[in-house]
Length: 560
Image (tube, rainbow, N blue to C red; front, side, top):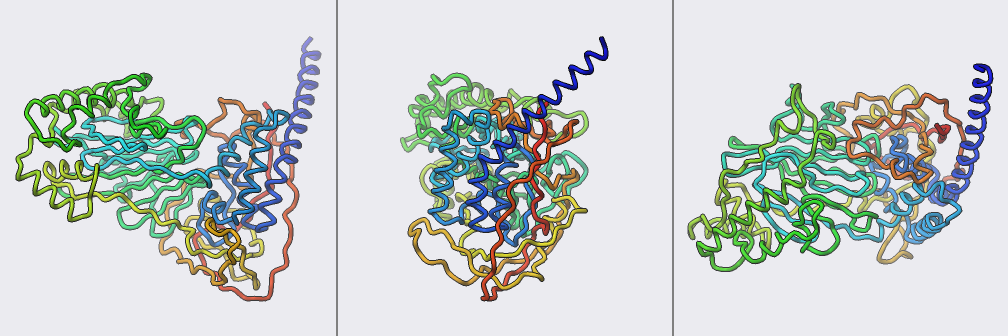
């Protein structure tokens, strides 16, 4: 009986292996047209982008960069010529809508949405001061709560931003920590209390302290962290961004946070910053209840964000509204130990940073004297603060002397960059990707004369590219590398290819280990990249922090 069971199990394993191999072969064939288009554009960068897309769809680390630019996958895609981007979008949309490719629907859904972002304008929301909020749809409100909350989260959790608000006295709270799932990497920033004994850096990646210099820090799953002074820009591999403006003084440490997302993604968003559906009226809905009347109350009673003359009756009504906003709306977006992305010290959890009875009293602009309001208004206007931001700025400046916080302006890192064709660099196989990319420049000593690549121009796709390459700065400091090892190969997850809804990235990536498998992977090599002969015009390429190896052939694991 035991022998029969072993034989049946062996036969079933062989059948499953053949089926998985057959499906993986079809996947490679279906994806080959995308890869071919990218490799024709650039044999090195195109292959990296092609392999990175597969890795991102499967929530795996992307291949090491083998070129001098410090781009994310989406930033690399954004510099493609307009016509090629349109062709890639057409191919992916066709695959996504093909019923015969249902087994790979998860892959094509991700790739199609990735390409569609280039035609979708970003929208932003932010939390600042003590703290005030401006939703993705333009709604403004104040929330003096203490605890940890969902700020903005996509349906899949691929983009997930959480905020910690801590008490400042008895009446006000401040943003003191931000935790994010950056496409599979758990990244946290702490303005004051750190989760460990390392006070030299505010950043933790998967719980480990990292340091970001003026150069770019590469996250394993394709995102980046860029810094300038106390300000940081976190960029997702799919293009979303979070900016953090850190402020430290004798009285308090806090941060202003702006989140830039694409409202066109399937499933939309949720959290304190709203759902990005273009309608501000439902942004104050209690979680799970879209019929909240808090927006009506805000419009009727608000004096903090209203222009009417402040009366005692209206001031009292606003305090009642703020109490309901904090108790009902704010509390509905509190996170749990299961969904938290934050790091905690020994014996701590999200309850350690929660006070459901805060604040003891709600303050309003109506509690200020006319002189206090006038002085605060003048300071804010001198800094160029206007509109809804002015009303929040008056509150901050009058009560806590918090300086005005203008909306951040983000410069596109691809602006002015001219790509040049480069040969495939020599691989280094003995170091993890994080060590090769963070703190070491690509070896360009062997680069031969090259020709300038075509550069996209959204306004005029047919315009000729410039011929002067962008000079890129070098790294001045080697950041601490991530402690976890990363594979040089991309291992596909068959459940993603099958469109399994349970295969999307979880909200807490620290609880995932997508690359672990007890079964031996079936290795399938995608078609080799094309070779191109460089032209004779020499071009100067400066070093940039990146890795030197090329992406390894794609491996696809067996089912099971």
